[in-house]
Every structure is written in structure tokens, then in C-alpha cells.
Length: 429
Image (cartoon, rainbow, N blue to C red; front, side, top):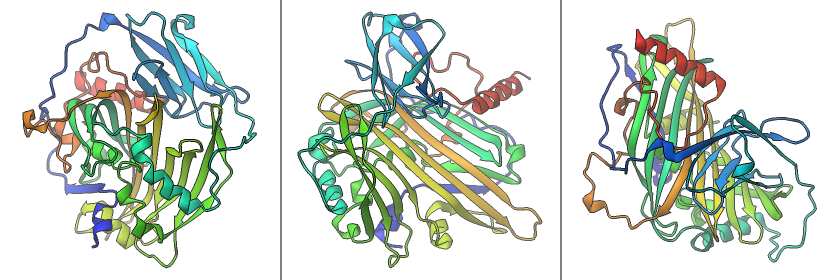
């Protein structure tokens, strides 16, 4: 397998025989953090919807202006944001592609749930300073300018990571973690790395057939989705010729034009590559969002990428592989804000009447960041999460009600909330 395919996604499934129903309670060695009194924070809860339809807006960005404190809405449009009490006159900024950004003073918000209605922008395109008639050349220019539009110094990020596995429509595995992300310069060839601060999980092995189904890599799977940081895995000069690029209808973010570029692999190239959309801010030529999928038509080649180990009496194939990455602007730079990876697999059992399908979601929201001089010499080997790590093997249960303390998290959807309540009841037995 060539270098591209070895690095392509670097997300693997680990399927091992089920030997025990016991939980694993290995505790990670955390990077030390200062203890903060939870009374120093105020929690603001909200629901972000379309002004005219009332439809929830998923993955809208929520930012406390003047700080790097942020979160995103979940798939139901809900969010919660924990704000230090010493920020008495702060402003909350809510933005969503194609909608007018809203900025509200915190002291105007009420206790309980606030509903924020965003108005869709009327698409009137002003003149822009740079116009590209060739979509491929625009993408090349985006990659060329990453040292101008993104951080060129190391950044230490605090992030919330969630990993779920469903068997058909039932949750069988949940993992959540507070993660320290050590992000190198966007012009550096060094790969970003992560360390786990707190982790919790529950796996219902009784619903996993005779298999322990695990995902390898944890937060790294979402970090590898960062198209700009890992542009060498996506759009090198050698790889550009394997894609067709075309312009879609442009859109707006706040008062700025955003180019939309479609890309897909050319039929002549048969190894699995990507297809999707790139959203590029017209003035700065910064990539601000990417939605893309892996081409899995060649299911044997796709299986070779994703499946690390499988049972001998089954064939395992990916049937969906989707990614989303969003960036948020702070000052004159754009920073990683949210990553989401969706992977569905199909298990074709030999000598069995019924087959099995699983769907998994890995998502990570950056909730704070600061400039940092990354010095790895002080780190213990156990503090740095290995790229082959399985988060489920690093976690305890969901029993601690104050587990997350003062960290901002992605609000769970109703179905996840129900699953967590069931887990908590089981642990009390």
C-alpha cells in the first residue's frame, strides 16, 4: 500500500473476540491543571434556530468575544457555555454559515434556556479583491496561504471529545473525554498530538454480538480531519491531478463572501480518495469549513484502510465515511473549532442468517486555546496519548456527577442523554 493510503485517514476499526463482560478501568496519567472553584463560573444555556422556520441549527459556533472560550451547538441546536464570573460585561457571538451573526451581551440572557433566532443572509455578492476562474488554482492558493491565515506558533487547546457506537439504533458504547491538544504551527510538518485529562465510558458488551467493537486513535481521528494542518494528506501538487474541482454557488458568513468549491476524485484513479465541499473566505482565502467523505466504492480497498483486525468468520466493510471540520476566527487568524467523523460499517457473517451494521461518531470541540511553547521533554511517556490508543481502554464509568467540573462540553442529544441515564442506573445497582 502506498504512502498516501497508509496515512489516508489513519482511522482504524479494531474488532476483537469478546472474552469478558467486565469493564476496563485503566486511568490515564493526566497533564496537571489548576483546580478551579466551580462557583467562579456561570452556565448559559441556549437553543439556536432559524428565524423563519424554527429549525435547529447544528454545529453553530458560540464564542465569548474577546476570549478564546467557545463551544458549538449539537445536532439539535442546543449548547451550554461556562463563563468565568469575573467577565461581567462579556458578549456572546453566535455564527452560522449563510446566516447573520448575532452578538448579545451576557447580562441580557436569562436563567434557563435562551432561544436565539438567526436570520438567513440574502445572497447579494459584492466585488472581491481576488477572483479565480479556476477552482483548482483557488485551492492551491488556500494551501499556499495557510501560514498567513492560521497560527504559525504552537497552540495549547482544551477540547471536549465524544465517541459513540450504535448497533442499528441502540447505543452500545459511549466515551467522553477532556483532552489537551498540543497543536504545532500550521506551517510545521510535525503532527499534532493529544493527552487525555479526564475520561469516562460505558460499553454494553451484551449488545455487541460476540465481539468487542473498539475504535483506535480516539481524538487523533478528529485531528487528522483538519484539512489545512494535514494538507499533505489531501491536496499536494502530486495529488491535485487526481481530483476534479468546480465552483458551487457562493454563500456568506456575516458580511463576507464565501466561495464554495466542490471536489471529487477522477474516475481514472481507483484507490479511495475524497469528495466534498470546501468553504473559502473570499478576502483572506482562508478555508473556514470543509465537508467531505471518502470514496468507498472500492470496498475491499476501503476495508484495507479502515479495518485493523476482524474476526475470521466475517467480512467487514465501511459503508459510510463522512468528515466535517470548522474553523473560528480570532484576531486575524483562524483556529480549529470543531471536527466530526462519522463511520458506518457492515459485518457480513459467514454461516449466519443475519448480518450486523454499526454506526460510530467521533467529534471534538475546541473550547479554549492559548499560545504555547511546546516542550515535550517534561512529558512522561504515559501522558502523551499514543496514536494507536483506544479511548475505551483508558476510561472509567459515568458515575461521577461532577465529572466535567468547569469544562465546556458539547451538549448531548436527547438519545445520548437517555443512554447516559441508563448507564448511571446500571452503575448504581
